[in-house]
Amino acid sequence: MPTVIIDPVTRIEGHAKVTIQLGDDGQVESARFHVTQFRGFEKLCEGRPFYEMPSLMARICGICPVSNLIASSKACDAILAVTIPANGARLRRIVNLAQILQSHALSVFYLSSPDLLLGMDSPPETRNLLGVAAAAPEVARDGIRLRQIGQQIIELLAGRRIHPAWVVPGGVSSPLTEEKRSQIVAMLPDGLAAIERSLDRFRGLFRAFPEEIAAFANFPSLFAGLTDQHNNLEFYDGPLRIVGADGEVVAGNLRPQDYPQYFCEVAEPDSFLKSAYYGKMGYPDGVYRVGPLARLNVVASCGTPRADHELGALRAFAGSPLLSSFHYHQARLIEMLHTIEKLEELLNDADILNPHVRATAEVNCEEGIGISEAPRGTLLHHYKVDSNGLVRWANLIIATGQNNLAMNLGVAQAAKYFIRNGQLSDGALNRIEAVIRSFDPCLSCSTHAMGSMPLDVEVLAASGETTDTRRRPQK
Amino acid sequence: MGWRAAELLGAALPEDVAEISICHQLTPEFAAKLENARLVIFLDAAVDQAPGEVTQRPVEPDGQFISSHSLTPGQLLSLAKLAYGCSPPAVLISGGALEMNPGDSMTGIGESCAAQMAELALNLLTRLPHA
Image 1 (spheres, each protein chain N blue to C red):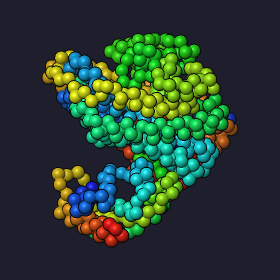
Image 2: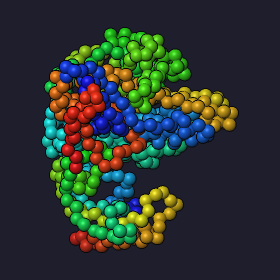
Image 3: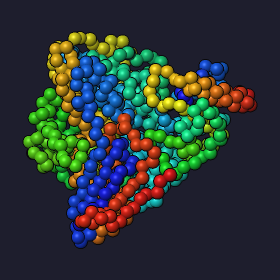
Image 4: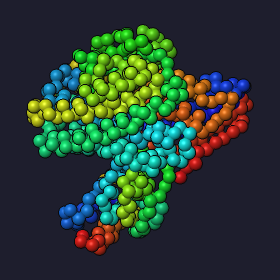
Protein backbone atom coordinates (compact mmCIF):
# COMPACT_ATOMS: atom_id res chain seq x y z
CA MET A 1 0.00 0.00 0.00
CA PRO A 2 1.72 3.22 -1.11
CA THR A 3 2.14 6.19 1.19
CA VAL A 4 2.57 9.81 0.18
CA ILE A 5 4.56 12.01 2.52
CA ILE A 6 4.58 15.80 2.24
CA ASP A 7 7.50 16.96 4.36
CA PRO A 8 7.78 19.78 5.15
CA VAL A 9 4.43 21.42 4.58
CA THR A 10 5.31 24.82 3.17
CA ARG A 11 4.09 28.35 3.84
CA ILE A 12 2.90 27.65 7.37
CA GLU A 13 4.35 28.90 10.67
CA GLY A 14 6.59 26.05 11.75
CA HIS A 15 7.44 22.59 10.54
CA ALA A 16 5.09 19.74 9.89
CA LYS A 17 4.49 16.92 7.49
CA VAL A 18 1.54 15.14 5.97
CA THR A 19 1.24 11.43 5.32
CA ILE A 20 -1.31 10.23 2.82
CA GLN A 21 -2.06 6.53 2.74
CA LEU A 22 -3.23 5.20 -0.60
CA GLY A 23 -5.05 1.92 -1.07
CA ASP A 24 -4.06 -0.68 -3.63
CA ASP A 25 -6.58 0.89 -5.99
CA GLY A 26 -4.77 4.24 -5.81
CA GLN A 27 -7.56 5.92 -3.86
CA VAL A 28 -6.80 7.83 -0.68
CA GLU A 29 -7.57 5.78 2.40
CA SER A 30 -6.46 8.19 5.09
CA ALA A 31 -4.30 11.23 5.72
CA ARG A 32 -2.57 12.60 8.78
CA PHE A 33 -1.02 15.93 9.72
CA HIS A 34 2.04 15.54 11.95
CA VAL A 35 3.82 18.30 13.83
CA THR A 36 7.46 17.38 14.05
CA GLN A 37 8.76 20.04 16.45
CA PHE A 38 9.08 19.46 20.15
CA ARG A 39 9.14 22.54 22.42
CA GLY A 40 8.55 21.64 26.04
CA PHE A 41 7.70 25.11 27.35
CA GLU A 42 5.30 23.75 29.96
CA LYS A 43 8.16 21.81 31.52
CA LEU A 44 11.02 24.26 31.23
CA CYS A 45 9.17 27.00 33.13
CA GLU A 46 8.78 24.88 36.28
CA GLY A 47 10.68 26.45 39.16
CA ARG A 48 10.69 29.94 37.67
CA PRO A 49 9.06 32.89 39.51
CA PHE A 50 5.55 33.50 38.18
CA TYR A 51 6.34 37.11 37.25
CA GLU A 52 8.84 35.84 34.68
CA MET A 53 6.14 33.86 32.93
CA PRO A 54 4.86 36.55 30.51
CA SER A 55 8.36 37.16 29.15
CA LEU A 56 9.18 33.45 29.07
CA MET A 57 5.93 32.52 27.38
CA ALA A 58 6.28 35.26 24.79
CA ARG A 59 9.31 33.30 23.55
CA ILE A 60 7.03 30.47 22.45
CA CYS A 61 6.42 32.30 19.23
CA GLY A 62 8.04 35.01 17.13
CA ILE A 63 4.84 35.78 15.22
CA CYS A 64 2.38 36.05 18.08
CA PRO A 65 4.43 36.82 21.20
CA VAL A 66 1.86 39.43 22.21
CA SER A 67 -0.89 36.81 22.39
CA ASN A 68 1.10 34.61 24.76
CA LEU A 69 2.13 37.69 26.71
CA ILE A 70 -1.51 38.62 27.26
CA ALA A 71 -2.81 35.17 28.19
CA SER A 72 0.17 34.68 30.50
CA SER A 73 -0.26 38.08 32.15
CA LYS A 74 -3.94 37.36 32.70
CA ALA A 75 -3.03 34.10 34.44
CA CYS A 76 -0.60 36.08 36.58
CA ASP A 77 -3.31 38.69 37.34
CA ALA A 78 -5.28 35.80 38.81
CA ILE A 79 -2.29 34.75 40.94
CA LEU A 80 -2.04 38.31 42.24
CA ALA A 81 -5.85 38.28 42.64
CA VAL A 82 -6.11 41.82 41.29
CA THR A 83 -8.55 43.57 39.01
CA ILE A 84 -6.32 45.50 36.68
CA PRO A 85 -7.00 49.22 36.09
CA ALA A 86 -9.49 49.89 33.32
CA ASN A 87 -6.94 51.73 31.22
CA GLY A 88 -4.43 48.93 31.64
CA ALA A 89 -7.00 46.56 30.18
CA ARG A 90 -7.76 49.05 27.40
CA LEU A 91 -4.10 49.27 26.42
CA ARG A 92 -3.78 45.48 26.48
CA ARG A 93 -6.76 45.32 24.13
CA ILE A 94 -5.06 47.74 21.74
CA VAL A 95 -1.82 45.78 21.57
CA ASN A 96 -3.78 42.54 21.13
CA LEU A 97 -5.73 44.04 18.21
CA ALA A 98 -2.46 45.18 16.62
CA GLN A 99 -1.13 41.64 17.04
CA ILE A 100 -4.18 40.19 15.31
CA LEU A 101 -3.88 42.73 12.49
CA GLN A 102 -0.22 42.01 11.76
CA SER A 103 -0.57 38.24 12.06
CA HIS A 104 -3.65 38.08 9.84
CA ALA A 105 -1.84 40.21 7.23
CA LEU A 106 1.00 37.70 7.26
CA SER A 107 -1.38 34.78 6.82
CA VAL A 108 -3.60 36.27 4.12
CA PHE A 109 -1.09 38.24 2.07
CA TYR A 110 2.28 36.55 2.54
CA LEU A 111 1.24 32.92 2.90
CA SER A 112 -2.12 32.37 1.21
CA SER A 113 -2.58 35.12 -1.37
CA PRO A 114 -0.25 33.33 -3.84
CA ASP A 115 -2.76 30.44 -3.98
CA LEU A 116 -5.72 32.78 -4.19
CA LEU A 117 -4.39 35.26 -6.74
CA LEU A 118 -2.15 33.09 -8.88
CA GLY A 119 -4.15 29.89 -8.58
CA MET A 120 -3.65 26.60 -6.79
CA ASP A 121 -2.13 25.12 -9.94
CA SER A 122 0.27 27.96 -10.70
CA PRO A 123 3.97 27.07 -10.87
CA PRO A 124 5.35 26.45 -7.35
CA GLU A 125 8.27 28.80 -7.95
CA THR A 126 5.87 31.72 -8.37
CA ARG A 127 3.60 30.87 -5.43
CA ASN A 128 5.14 33.36 -3.04
CA LEU A 129 5.01 37.06 -2.23
CA LEU A 130 7.31 37.89 -5.13
CA GLY A 131 4.86 36.21 -7.48
CA VAL A 132 2.02 38.22 -5.97
CA ALA A 133 4.02 41.44 -6.29
CA ALA A 134 4.65 40.69 -9.96
CA ALA A 135 1.00 39.90 -10.71
CA ALA A 136 -0.73 42.42 -8.47
CA PRO A 137 1.71 44.88 -6.86
CA GLU A 138 -1.08 46.76 -5.10
CA VAL A 139 -2.04 43.59 -3.20
CA ALA A 140 1.54 43.08 -2.05
CA ARG A 141 1.75 46.74 -1.01
CA ASP A 142 -1.50 46.56 0.96
CA GLY A 143 -0.38 43.38 2.71
CA ILE A 144 2.96 44.91 3.62
CA ARG A 145 1.29 48.10 4.82
CA LEU A 146 -1.23 46.30 7.00
CA ARG A 147 1.45 44.16 8.62
CA GLN A 148 3.59 47.25 9.09
CA ILE A 149 0.76 49.10 10.84
CA GLY A 150 0.17 46.23 13.26
CA GLN A 151 3.85 45.91 14.02
CA GLN A 152 4.38 49.64 14.40
CA ILE A 153 1.54 49.88 16.89
CA ILE A 154 3.10 47.04 18.90
CA GLU A 155 6.48 48.76 18.78
CA LEU A 156 5.07 52.15 19.77
CA LEU A 157 3.19 50.71 22.73
CA ALA A 158 5.40 47.89 23.85
CA GLY A 159 8.86 49.06 22.83
CA ARG A 160 9.62 46.38 20.29
CA ARG A 161 7.80 44.27 17.75
CA ILE A 162 8.96 40.84 18.80
CA HIS A 163 9.00 39.59 22.39
CA PRO A 164 8.05 42.88 24.04
CA ALA A 165 7.83 42.96 27.83
CA TRP A 166 5.34 45.79 28.28
CA VAL A 167 2.34 43.64 29.24
CA VAL A 168 3.00 42.60 32.83
CA PRO A 169 1.14 40.95 35.70
CA GLY A 170 -1.31 43.57 36.95
CA GLY A 171 -1.58 45.59 33.73
CA VAL A 172 1.00 47.23 31.50
CA SER A 173 4.30 48.78 32.53
CA SER A 174 3.75 52.32 31.19
CA PRO A 175 0.83 54.48 30.03
CA LEU A 176 0.25 55.74 26.51
CA THR A 177 1.50 59.23 25.66
CA GLU A 178 -0.39 61.72 23.51
CA GLU A 179 2.46 61.70 21.00
CA LYS A 180 2.23 57.95 20.51
CA ARG A 181 -1.56 58.02 20.48
CA SER A 182 -1.46 60.57 17.66
CA GLN A 183 1.08 58.51 15.73
CA ILE A 184 -1.11 55.41 15.94
CA VAL A 185 -4.31 57.26 15.07
CA ALA A 186 -2.60 58.77 12.03
CA MET A 187 -1.91 55.29 10.61
CA LEU A 188 -5.47 54.04 10.81
CA PRO A 189 -6.97 55.72 7.70
CA ASP A 190 -4.22 54.14 5.65
CA GLY A 191 -4.99 50.76 7.17
CA LEU A 192 -8.71 51.17 6.60
CA ALA A 193 -8.18 52.01 2.94
CA ALA A 194 -5.84 49.03 2.49
CA ILE A 195 -8.19 46.51 4.07
CA GLU A 196 -11.23 47.84 2.21
CA ARG A 197 -9.34 47.61 -1.10
CA SER A 198 -8.33 44.08 -0.20
CA LEU A 199 -11.85 43.02 0.69
CA ASP A 200 -13.12 44.45 -2.58
CA ARG A 201 -10.52 42.45 -4.44
CA PHE A 202 -10.75 39.16 -2.56
CA ARG A 203 -14.51 39.05 -2.06
CA GLY A 204 -15.15 38.06 -5.66
CA LEU A 205 -12.01 35.99 -5.88
CA PHE A 206 -13.11 33.69 -3.07
CA ARG A 207 -16.18 32.72 -5.09
CA ALA A 208 -13.96 31.40 -7.85
CA PHE A 209 -12.93 28.44 -5.68
CA PRO A 210 -16.07 26.29 -5.45
CA GLU A 211 -14.14 23.01 -5.25
CA GLU A 212 -11.90 24.33 -2.51
CA ILE A 213 -14.92 25.66 -0.60
CA ALA A 214 -16.48 22.22 -0.93
CA ALA A 215 -13.44 20.19 0.08
CA PHE A 216 -11.34 22.33 2.47
CA ALA A 217 -12.38 20.97 5.85
CA ASN A 218 -16.02 21.49 4.99
CA PHE A 219 -17.93 19.49 7.57
CA PRO A 220 -20.05 19.97 10.68
CA SER A 221 -18.13 20.60 13.88
CA LEU A 222 -18.34 22.67 17.01
CA PHE A 223 -16.91 26.21 17.11
CA ALA A 224 -15.49 28.01 20.13
CA GLY A 225 -14.51 31.58 20.94
CA LEU A 226 -14.90 34.48 23.34
CA THR A 227 -17.84 36.87 23.07
CA ASP A 228 -18.74 40.11 24.78
CA GLN A 229 -21.97 40.69 26.67
CA HIS A 230 -23.72 41.77 23.46
CA ASN A 231 -22.63 38.66 21.54
CA ASN A 232 -20.08 40.67 19.57
CA LEU A 233 -16.51 39.76 18.62
CA GLU A 234 -14.23 39.79 21.63
CA PHE A 235 -10.48 39.19 21.64
CA TYR A 236 -9.41 40.03 25.17
CA ASP A 237 -11.92 38.94 27.76
CA GLY A 238 -15.41 37.67 28.36
CA PRO A 239 -17.01 34.27 28.61
CA LEU A 240 -16.36 31.48 26.16
CA ARG A 241 -19.11 30.15 23.96
CA ILE A 242 -19.35 26.90 22.00
CA VAL A 243 -21.85 26.58 19.16
CA GLY A 244 -22.78 23.61 17.02
CA ALA A 245 -22.87 23.20 13.26
CA ASP A 246 -26.52 24.33 13.31
CA GLY A 247 -25.56 27.58 15.02
CA GLU A 248 -27.23 26.61 18.30
CA VAL A 249 -25.34 27.37 21.49
CA VAL A 250 -24.00 24.12 22.91
CA ALA A 251 -22.43 25.78 25.92
CA GLY A 252 -22.42 29.46 26.81
CA ASN A 253 -21.11 31.77 29.49
CA LEU A 254 -18.26 29.38 30.17
CA ARG A 255 -15.77 30.67 32.72
CA PRO A 256 -12.08 30.23 31.90
CA GLN A 257 -11.43 28.64 35.28
CA ASP A 258 -13.84 25.84 34.39
CA TYR A 259 -11.99 24.92 31.20
CA PRO A 260 -11.02 21.38 32.36
CA GLN A 261 -14.73 20.57 32.27
CA TYR A 262 -15.06 21.41 28.59
CA PHE A 263 -11.61 21.38 26.97
CA CYS A 264 -9.76 18.07 27.11
CA GLU A 265 -6.52 17.14 25.41
CA VAL A 266 -5.08 13.93 24.05
CA ALA A 267 -1.55 13.17 22.85
CA GLU A 268 -1.56 11.15 19.66
CA PRO A 269 1.38 8.89 18.80
CA ASP A 270 2.30 10.47 15.48
CA SER A 271 2.54 14.16 16.42
CA PHE A 272 4.07 16.42 19.05
CA LEU A 273 0.96 18.60 18.82
CA LYS A 274 -1.71 17.64 21.34
CA SER A 275 -5.30 17.50 20.12
CA ALA A 276 -8.03 19.24 22.06
CA TYR A 277 -11.66 18.11 22.02
CA TYR A 278 -14.91 19.10 23.67
CA GLY A 279 -15.01 16.92 26.78
CA LYS A 280 -18.73 16.22 26.81
CA MET A 281 -18.56 14.69 23.34
CA GLY A 282 -15.36 12.75 23.97
CA TYR A 283 -12.43 11.92 21.75
CA PRO A 284 -12.43 11.95 18.76
CA ASP A 285 -16.05 13.07 18.30
CA GLY A 286 -15.68 16.37 20.15
CA VAL A 287 -14.05 18.11 17.20
CA TYR A 288 -14.21 21.87 17.45
CA ARG A 289 -12.62 24.74 15.60
CA VAL A 290 -11.27 28.04 16.90
CA GLY A 291 -9.90 31.14 15.19
CA PRO A 292 -11.44 33.66 12.80
CA LEU A 293 -14.00 31.27 11.28
CA ALA A 294 -15.11 30.02 14.69
CA ARG A 295 -15.20 33.50 16.17
CA LEU A 296 -17.54 34.70 13.43
CA ASN A 297 -19.70 31.62 14.02
CA VAL A 298 -20.06 32.09 17.78
CA VAL A 299 -21.03 35.78 17.66
CA ALA A 300 -24.18 37.46 16.48
CA SER A 301 -22.20 40.33 15.01
CA CYS A 302 -18.79 41.92 15.01
CA GLY A 303 -19.95 45.06 16.78
CA THR A 304 -18.46 47.57 14.34
CA PRO A 305 -20.38 48.81 11.29
CA ARG A 306 -18.00 48.07 8.43
CA ALA A 307 -17.07 44.61 9.66
CA ASP A 308 -20.73 43.82 10.28
CA HIS A 309 -21.56 44.77 6.71
CA GLU A 310 -18.89 42.39 5.43
CA LEU A 311 -19.99 39.63 7.79
CA GLY A 312 -23.54 39.98 6.51
CA ALA A 313 -22.35 39.64 2.93
CA LEU A 314 -20.28 36.56 3.75
CA ARG A 315 -23.17 34.91 5.58
CA ALA A 316 -25.49 35.70 2.66
CA PHE A 317 -23.08 33.93 0.33
CA ALA A 318 -21.88 31.02 2.44
CA GLY A 319 -24.56 30.58 5.09
CA SER A 320 -24.30 30.65 8.83
CA PRO A 321 -22.53 29.02 10.55
CA LEU A 322 -19.68 28.95 8.05
CA LEU A 323 -18.66 25.31 7.75
CA SER A 324 -15.88 25.33 5.17
CA SER A 325 -12.43 26.20 6.45
CA PHE A 326 -11.77 27.93 3.12
CA HIS A 327 -13.79 30.80 4.61
CA TYR A 328 -11.09 31.31 7.25
CA HIS A 329 -9.40 33.61 4.73
CA GLN A 330 -12.37 35.93 4.36
CA ALA A 331 -13.03 35.76 8.09
CA ARG A 332 -9.46 36.95 8.64
CA LEU A 333 -9.99 39.94 6.35
CA ILE A 334 -13.22 40.83 8.15
CA GLU A 335 -11.45 40.64 11.50
CA MET A 336 -8.70 42.91 10.16
CA LEU A 337 -11.35 45.46 9.22
CA HIS A 338 -12.85 45.09 12.68
CA THR A 339 -9.48 45.61 14.38
CA ILE A 340 -9.00 48.92 12.56
CA GLU A 341 -12.47 50.10 13.57
CA LYS A 342 -11.96 48.95 17.14
CA LEU A 343 -8.52 50.54 17.40
CA GLU A 344 -9.98 53.87 16.40
CA GLU A 345 -12.71 53.52 19.01
CA LEU A 346 -10.31 52.60 21.82
CA LEU A 347 -7.72 55.26 20.95
CA ASN A 348 -10.41 57.93 21.05
CA ASP A 349 -11.59 56.87 24.49
CA ALA A 350 -11.53 59.87 26.81
CA ASP A 351 -9.56 57.93 29.40
CA ILE A 352 -6.94 56.42 27.12
CA LEU A 353 -4.08 58.55 28.50
CA ASN A 354 -4.93 57.78 32.14
CA PRO A 355 -1.60 56.95 33.79
CA HIS A 356 -3.09 54.40 36.19
CA VAL A 357 -2.34 51.25 34.20
CA ARG A 358 -0.99 48.72 36.68
CA ALA A 359 -2.05 47.11 39.92
CA THR A 360 0.54 45.58 42.21
CA ALA A 361 0.22 42.81 44.77
CA GLU A 362 1.99 39.80 46.18
CA VAL A 363 1.01 36.20 45.53
CA ASN A 364 -2.56 35.86 46.75
CA CYS A 365 -3.63 32.72 44.89
CA GLU A 366 -1.61 29.65 44.09
CA GLU A 367 -3.36 29.07 40.79
CA GLY A 368 -4.15 31.32 37.85
CA ILE A 369 -5.86 30.87 34.48
CA GLY A 370 -5.69 33.42 31.68
CA ILE A 371 -7.64 33.29 28.44
CA SER A 372 -7.65 35.51 25.38
CA GLU A 373 -8.14 35.30 21.63
CA ALA A 374 -4.93 34.96 19.65
CA PRO A 375 -4.99 35.41 15.86
CA ARG A 376 -5.39 31.66 15.41
CA GLY A 377 -7.97 31.20 18.14
CA THR A 378 -8.57 30.84 21.83
CA LEU A 379 -5.41 30.71 23.92
CA LEU A 380 -5.35 29.51 27.51
CA HIS A 381 -2.53 29.62 30.08
CA HIS A 382 -2.92 27.84 33.41
CA TYR A 383 -0.27 28.01 36.15
CA LYS A 384 0.08 26.60 39.64
CA VAL A 385 2.62 28.23 41.95
CA ASP A 386 3.83 27.65 45.49
CA SER A 387 3.55 30.20 48.32
CA ASN A 388 6.75 31.85 47.11
CA GLY A 389 5.33 32.31 43.63
CA LEU A 390 7.52 29.67 41.97
CA VAL A 391 5.81 27.87 39.13
CA ARG A 392 5.13 24.24 39.96
CA TRP A 393 2.99 23.28 36.99
CA ALA A 394 1.84 24.87 33.74
CA ASN A 395 -0.60 23.92 31.04
CA LEU A 396 -1.00 25.80 27.77
CA ILE A 397 -3.89 25.13 25.42
CA ILE A 398 -3.07 26.77 22.15
CA ALA A 399 -5.30 27.47 19.19
CA THR A 400 -3.51 25.19 16.78
CA GLY A 401 -3.93 22.23 19.12
CA GLN A 402 -7.63 22.98 19.34
CA ASN A 403 -7.85 22.88 15.55
CA ASN A 404 -5.72 19.75 15.25
CA LEU A 405 -8.55 17.22 14.94
CA ALA A 406 -10.32 19.42 12.39
CA MET A 407 -7.10 19.91 10.43
CA ASN A 408 -6.61 16.16 10.25
CA LEU A 409 -10.16 15.63 9.03
CA GLY A 410 -9.66 18.47 6.55
CA VAL A 411 -6.44 17.02 5.17
CA ALA A 412 -8.16 13.66 4.67
CA GLN A 413 -11.19 15.29 3.02
CA ALA A 414 -9.06 17.29 0.61
CA ALA A 415 -6.78 14.34 -0.17
CA LYS A 416 -9.77 12.16 -1.02
CA TYR A 417 -11.24 14.90 -3.19
CA PHE A 418 -8.17 16.04 -5.09
CA ILE A 419 -6.03 12.90 -5.37
CA ARG A 420 -7.67 10.53 -7.76
CA ASN A 421 -6.34 7.18 -8.92
CA GLY A 422 -3.09 7.88 -7.14
CA GLN A 423 -2.32 10.81 -9.44
CA LEU A 424 -0.14 13.18 -7.44
CA SER A 425 -0.33 16.43 -9.32
CA ASP A 426 1.46 19.40 -7.79
CA GLY A 427 -1.85 21.25 -7.69
CA ALA A 428 -3.44 18.47 -5.64
CA LEU A 429 -0.58 18.46 -3.18
CA ASN A 430 -0.69 22.24 -2.93
CA ARG A 431 -4.40 22.08 -2.15
CA ILE A 432 -3.74 19.67 0.70
CA GLU A 433 -1.19 22.10 2.10
CA ALA A 434 -3.62 24.95 1.47
CA VAL A 435 -6.22 23.28 3.69
CA ILE A 436 -3.71 23.45 6.52
CA ARG A 437 -2.77 27.01 5.55
CA SER A 438 -6.42 28.06 5.78
CA PHE A 439 -6.26 27.30 9.53
CA ASP A 440 -3.00 29.29 9.71
CA PRO A 441 -1.45 26.89 12.18
CA CYS A 442 1.39 28.26 14.25
CA LEU A 443 3.79 25.47 15.08
CA SER A 444 6.11 27.45 17.30
CA CYS A 445 7.23 30.28 15.12
CA SER A 446 10.20 31.11 17.26
CA THR A 447 12.10 28.24 15.67
CA HIS A 448 12.82 28.77 12.02
CA ALA A 449 14.17 26.39 9.43
CA MET A 450 17.56 27.31 8.11
CA GLY A 451 17.61 27.98 4.40
CA SER A 452 14.82 27.23 1.98
CA MET A 453 11.95 24.87 2.52
CA PRO A 454 11.71 22.36 -0.30
CA LEU A 455 8.70 20.12 -0.59
CA ASP A 456 9.63 16.46 -0.81
CA VAL A 457 7.00 13.93 -1.69
CA GLU A 458 7.74 10.26 -1.48
CA VAL A 459 5.53 7.40 -2.54
CA LEU A 460 6.32 4.27 -0.60
CA ALA A 461 5.18 0.77 -1.48
CA ALA A 462 3.92 -1.56 1.23
CA SER A 463 7.41 -3.01 1.41
CA GLY A 464 8.78 0.42 2.28
CA GLU A 465 10.44 0.78 -1.10
CA THR A 466 10.29 4.28 -2.56
CA THR A 467 8.39 4.08 -5.82
CA ASP A 468 8.19 7.78 -6.63
CA THR A 469 9.94 10.89 -5.37
CA ARG A 470 9.15 14.47 -6.22
CA ARG A 471 11.02 17.54 -5.13
CA ARG A 472 9.87 21.10 -5.56
CA PRO A 473 12.43 23.39 -7.12
CA GLN A 474 14.21 25.58 -4.62
CA LYS A 475 16.45 28.58 -4.85
CA MET B 1 28.69 42.44 13.80
CA GLY B 2 26.21 44.01 11.39
CA TRP B 3 24.36 45.54 14.37
CA ARG B 4 27.58 46.92 15.80
CA ALA B 5 28.59 48.37 12.43
CA ALA B 6 25.18 50.01 12.10
CA GLU B 7 25.49 51.50 15.59
CA LEU B 8 28.94 52.90 14.78
CA LEU B 9 27.65 54.29 11.51
CA GLY B 10 24.68 55.88 13.24
CA ALA B 11 26.97 57.56 15.75
CA ALA B 12 29.23 58.92 13.01
CA LEU B 13 26.51 60.23 10.69
CA PRO B 14 24.89 63.63 10.92
CA GLU B 15 21.13 63.39 11.49
CA ASP B 16 18.83 62.92 8.50
CA VAL B 17 21.60 61.72 6.18
CA ALA B 18 20.42 58.14 6.32
CA GLU B 19 17.81 55.98 7.99
CA ILE B 20 19.41 53.13 9.88
CA SER B 21 17.35 50.03 10.58
CA ILE B 22 18.75 47.35 12.85
CA CYS B 23 17.07 43.98 12.58
CA HIS B 24 17.54 40.26 13.14
CA GLN B 25 16.48 39.46 9.61
CA LEU B 26 15.15 41.12 6.49
CA THR B 27 11.36 40.89 6.34
CA PRO B 28 9.08 41.93 3.47
CA GLU B 29 8.10 45.13 5.32
CA PHE B 30 11.55 46.57 4.61
CA ALA B 31 10.63 46.73 0.93
CA ALA B 32 8.39 49.71 1.70
CA LYS B 33 11.35 51.56 3.20
CA LEU B 34 13.29 51.29 -0.05
CA GLU B 35 10.69 53.18 -2.06
CA ASN B 36 12.45 56.53 -1.93
CA ALA B 37 15.98 55.38 -1.14
CA ARG B 38 18.89 56.71 -3.19
CA LEU B 39 21.23 54.03 -1.92
CA VAL B 40 20.74 50.92 0.19
CA ILE B 41 23.62 49.53 2.25
CA PHE B 42 23.30 46.12 3.87
CA LEU B 43 25.71 45.43 6.73
CA ASP B 44 26.07 41.81 7.79
CA ALA B 45 28.42 39.26 9.28
CA ALA B 46 29.55 36.49 6.98
CA VAL B 47 30.61 32.93 7.65
CA ASP B 48 31.84 32.29 4.12
CA GLN B 49 34.83 34.63 4.25
CA ALA B 50 37.95 34.76 6.38
CA PRO B 51 37.54 36.11 9.93
CA GLY B 52 38.32 39.83 9.90
CA GLU B 53 38.03 40.17 6.15
CA VAL B 54 35.73 42.98 5.04
CA THR B 55 34.23 42.92 1.57
CA GLN B 56 31.94 45.17 -0.40
CA ARG B 57 29.90 44.16 -3.43
CA PRO B 58 26.93 45.51 -5.34
CA VAL B 59 23.59 43.72 -4.88
CA GLU B 60 21.08 43.22 -7.66
CA PRO B 61 17.44 42.12 -7.41
CA ASP B 62 17.55 38.37 -7.33
CA GLY B 63 15.71 35.33 -6.17
CA GLN B 64 12.46 33.52 -6.80
CA PHE B 65 11.94 31.84 -3.48
CA ILE B 66 10.70 34.09 -0.73
CA SER B 67 9.94 33.29 2.86
CA SER B 68 7.65 35.28 5.08
CA HIS B 69 10.33 35.72 7.71
CA SER B 70 13.71 36.24 6.13
CA LEU B 71 14.77 37.50 2.77
CA THR B 72 18.19 37.85 1.22
CA PRO B 73 19.20 41.38 0.21
CA GLY B 74 18.60 40.41 -3.43
CA GLN B 75 15.12 39.09 -2.68
CA LEU B 76 14.27 42.25 -0.77
CA LEU B 77 15.36 44.35 -3.76
CA SER B 78 13.23 42.15 -6.04
CA LEU B 79 10.20 42.70 -3.85
CA ALA B 80 10.81 46.46 -3.76
CA LYS B 81 11.11 46.52 -7.53
CA LEU B 82 7.96 44.47 -8.15
CA ALA B 83 5.75 45.96 -5.45
CA TYR B 84 6.94 49.57 -5.40
CA GLY B 85 8.60 49.98 -8.78
CA CYS B 86 11.81 51.15 -7.19
CA SER B 87 15.25 49.82 -7.87
CA PRO B 88 17.76 51.73 -5.75
CA PRO B 89 21.46 50.93 -6.07
CA ALA B 90 22.48 48.60 -3.27
CA VAL B 91 25.71 47.43 -1.68
CA LEU B 92 26.39 44.57 0.71
CA ILE B 93 29.24 45.13 3.15
CA SER B 94 30.21 41.89 4.86
CA GLY B 95 32.58 41.15 7.69
CA GLY B 96 34.06 37.70 8.16
CA ALA B 97 33.13 36.40 11.60
CA LEU B 98 35.43 34.38 13.83
CA GLU B 99 32.86 33.20 16.37
CA MET B 100 29.06 33.32 16.11
CA ASN B 101 28.08 31.95 19.53
CA PRO B 102 26.49 34.20 22.15
CA GLY B 103 28.87 36.09 24.42
CA ASP B 104 29.19 39.14 26.63
CA SER B 105 31.14 41.12 24.07
CA MET B 106 32.49 40.93 20.56
CA THR B 107 35.95 39.59 19.81
CA GLY B 108 38.69 42.04 18.91
CA ILE B 109 38.46 40.84 15.32
CA GLY B 110 34.71 41.42 15.37
CA GLU B 111 35.05 44.94 16.77
CA SER B 112 37.69 45.79 14.20
CA CYS B 113 35.59 44.34 11.40
CA ALA B 114 32.50 46.29 12.48
CA ALA B 115 34.53 49.52 12.56
CA GLN B 116 35.85 48.88 9.04
CA MET B 117 32.33 48.08 7.80
CA ALA B 118 30.99 51.32 9.27
CA GLU B 119 33.87 53.23 7.70
CA LEU B 120 33.14 51.77 4.27
CA ALA B 121 29.46 52.60 4.60
CA LEU B 122 30.29 56.13 5.71
CA ASN B 123 32.50 56.61 2.65
CA LEU B 124 29.71 55.45 0.37
CA LEU B 125 27.24 57.83 1.97
CA THR B 126 29.52 60.83 1.91
CA ARG B 127 30.11 60.30 -1.82
CA LEU B 128 26.39 60.58 -2.52
CA PRO B 129 25.49 63.92 -4.15
CA HIS B 130 24.11 66.42 -1.60
CA ALA B 131 24.76 64.00 1.23
